[in-house]
Image 1 (cartoon, rainbow, N blue to C red):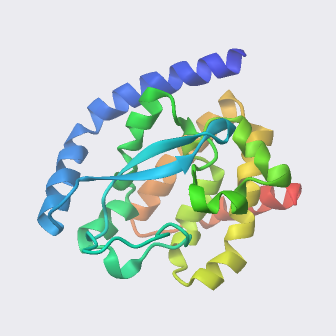
Image 2: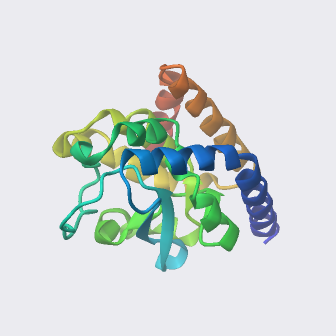
Length: 221
């Protein structure tokens, strides 16, 4: 109970400070999106959160608008590379596209650290058997699964290759988080997130962190 109270209080304060501190990045993101591809600034995704309840998750739009909407566009775990505009690639690389999720943290539908929100049409891939344990905690902006995907998964475009090499470990890390969840582990993941972004900006890869996540996942397989 103490951990939950501290976590929620910390989330609210961090989200509030985060929105204020990153406001220049919001302006850069908004202007860059409108110049790149005129249309909505935000992308609203329908996701599954804590207790398997649906909610709306916000992101900065990084893809060109479709003239004719596709059905089941979230069925794939890989983004449609052909639709991502150049500025969209940049905001994805440095995670500026994730900033609007601070609004989700502020309203309590997400946390700073936790399992990643699951797309409704990917629910059966991530929330069954022991992996449904991830539904017991708030979903997060970052966490071991999200960072593993950021370091390694984002490099793999092919869907089949992603499912073979990334998906099993990513799914396992969702379960790993529930087993390790606590104030100190959350703080560790926040530090790891900052390090990952700095590495990405410098064009480097956190291989040491990747190895740690893989070893953590193996312990629960």
